[in-house]
Length: 150
Length: 485
Image (cartoon, rainbow over all chains, first blue to last red; front, top):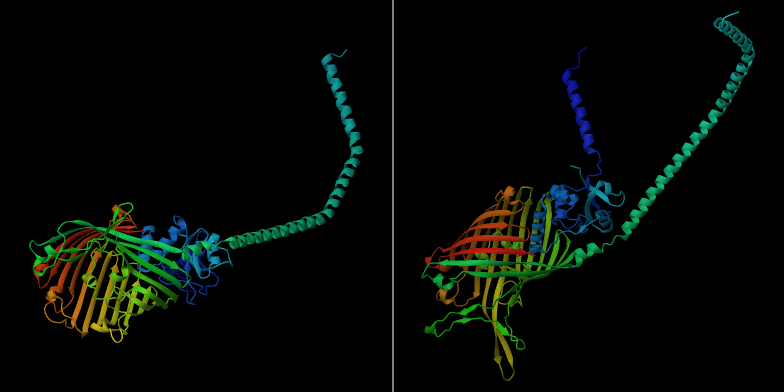
């Protein structure tokens, strides 16, 4: 009978380790940043490029025509910093410059900043915001994107 | 007689015998008692064993009941949490967002510059320009914007200026009997005797925007012509350099138009935008911001493709425009038998304009370039200004373009968030191909420094070199502080 080669077991082990790692990476963490939208928004998932469009007001309406209302959390919070850095690819100064320029060019102003984005997104049609997973309330708003905890 | 010691031993032996005898008697007597005790314990054990299953069941039942209770409590707590959350949500006042989004917003920018002009001694430009260095308040622009609904917004931009105070109207020319004239707007308050200078207000734009969809929006009012980069960047805090391109100064393309426009954006791919705009306006005229003097409305079309990657940005666009310029005069035609007034067209031409722009950002490099072209064809010609030569104005071509390259120095370790970017620019401009005087080359070297989000400092050297007339060579050294607020 032919013996199973050693490298087969090695590959199997590595594959198992990879699966475990993937499974671990997928595990939900209360510190994950979840992007949430109002229940009226038909879109069920968005890409990071679309998130940039919505939060930088390059895209003003949802595919169904409803107005996009981006909502930021308050300035100088770890959540705001993380979202700005990881999604918009900006620092606070760069974001400020961006909005000052946009206001001069086209009159667009930066999104409102609120303490509880879940409440705001729940209440405002077409709203999109973000929060930590631990603050997310199922059934109140819809998750469309997850930024895993770093 | 037995000695005491022996007597004790003998007594001890008697005691031992007595004890053994007692035990021997006691054992048979106690044995049944032990047996009874054992029997009693066994009976008790049997009783407990008989009772144990029912107690265990009871405990398990109680445990189950408690578990059920706990579960019910958990459910009730969760329900209370939900209720509290609902109450919080119902108490949330979205007025905050409404006010933030829908209230009137007032903001703006201004810039202060320091200018030194360097012209060749004895040249025409030395006489035309200010020889002394000077501070200048160039722009003080104030915006009022409001979002009335999700799709409806309005913006007004006003530019405040000290002008027309100081505007030179006429040079002294005794041979022609002309005196030097300069506008002086100084007035005094008769009550307080305070003197002050009146300034001016220029409406940069004032329009309503209705944007129900990304791909469709309607603008009505006085809006910036949607062409190029310089005109759309608009404000000095946004622009890289100080001095506007000559093609912009020469107004080869109208900077703003009064009328309506349709605009929109499509998303052909991720991070890619396709913008369009259609403009319908009074077009250009001697008083186009007040009224149009012909029926031919100007028509324009803008197309622009933009890609915005993380480290790479590219946009390429074009704007085409065609419109008529008409000037008239009104005159009294007759007084008798009826008073009548007539009007006559004194100047009329059609213009066809093409404008192209390219913006490329790669890492810390940025290149922007624009090219504009205009053909003017006269229907009713006017005499040429004296400096342009004799005769009437011919049809002519105007064109110009520039390319500007800037590089943001990688000095994060020294400057942190502050940005320092040197730039160079080369421009050519042919304002009217039939006149040699208007053909110029302009070279610019500058430094753009952004110490904060709100302030931009610029230092710039400009050399203006007419290609066909050296007498018009002039250089400027300028510094500018542009502030957003």
